[in-house]
Amino acid sequence: MASLNSRTAGALEGEVRVPGDKSISHRALMLGALATGRTLITGLLDGEDVLRTASAMRQLGAGVSAGADGVWRVAGRGIGGLVEPDGVLDLGNAGTGARLVLGLLASHPLMATLTGDASLRRRPMARVALPLQRMGATIHAREGCLLPLTIIGAANPVPISYRLPVPSAQVKSAILLAGLNTPGHTTVVEPEPTRDHTELMLRHFGVEVRVERTPQGRATTIAGQPEIEGRAIAVPGDPSSAAFPMVAALLLPGSDIVLTGIGVNPHRTGLIRTLIEMGARIEIANRRDWAGEPVADIAVRASELRGVEVPPSRAPSMIDEYPILAVAAAFARGRTIMRGLRELRVKESDRLQRIASGLAACGVEAAIDGDDLIVTGAGRPPRGGATIETALDHRIAMAFLVMGMASQKPVGIDDSGPIDTSFPGFAKVMNGLGADIAPADPATPGAGE
Ligand code: S3P
Image 1 (tube, protein in one colour):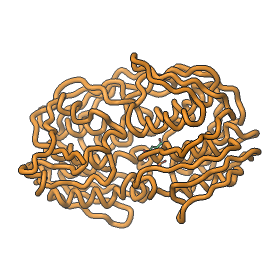
Image 2: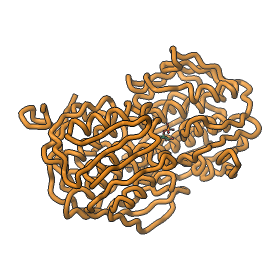
Image 3: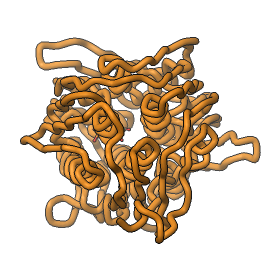
Image 4: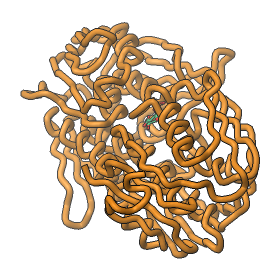
């Protein structure tokens, strides 16, 4: 395991691009595999999670290759055309990869076995298995509906109308992807709207997607078995990755950075909204559209932050950003109360617990109250000086490296490997802006304290 140490740096300056959006990258490969003809993808995230999806698509019969020009080419099979894989599909650390692939497979009459790393094998699959079984798929899983599991897709899938019991774009997307090879209309109703990348990309591929407001929530319907043809897709920079340099720039006095080509889909911008409420100087400019997704450049200047209350209704639009928001809250003046974080318990790690214990180890007052997280900041840099266990969780790793950039003492992480799942080159990008992130020297504080 490669450990890393992050120590106080001066002001961050410069213009930076972050890797492509993870959610959109998975979907681009999958819809490319279902389209007829060729899909060309620029800006695809070449992180571990997405590479696993690329391999899975190859195993299911699609042609997937990365050119020296950085353009990915997918030769699709057409809807209903996936073939039975002759080996296990290993989705690594990727919850999105695993759950969306299950959706694809549910309406193809073939058998496949899925597995993943120790983190993914602990994550709940019942949330997708249940609706997919109602569509006709057969699923055999370990006790508790955990990976590895085997799915036999339905030969005659039936369309369903399904109300999401948890706010999850992965579950919604799995059902819609299964609906693509199902005759009739498949509907997902969401009491709390989640990211709509699947819907936007389906439209980009020419699929008719109907979205209605109903008393039960937002209802999204697709008509099954459309013809879809390959398309060109430009993947925006991932707002969940941009969140790390963004918060680092807010915390380091004198910082002034610009993040270019970042996705600003309103279902993903809860963190920006919250930081602005905390007093952050963030400006969004040069708005444009890439393959149906809103994109912009984001300017961030160092700011004095104050604690705020974040309502549970905002959680779906910033679900992956709580680790880094909690770090920002540790530097803010006063209490930040983040409500309704139950879903954080079933992410790559139990993030609620990991955030609270990591902050406490860095000398920050942090408490869990039911599903709420309360962080009390003193309006100045906390002590830091701890080594944080990454627990196969990329966002915990990056959040605490940002913590070390502005704390009194360095902060270390025991394992930097998981960062590659979503943000390959993280340390290099941050150091390019002025950070000081380096392999841990066992003799320095933060590396062993
Ligand atoms: C994702 C949805 C979210 C998010 C994950 C990516 C997606 O998960 O946390 O990182 O691409 O659909 P849930 O669907 O479990 O909320």
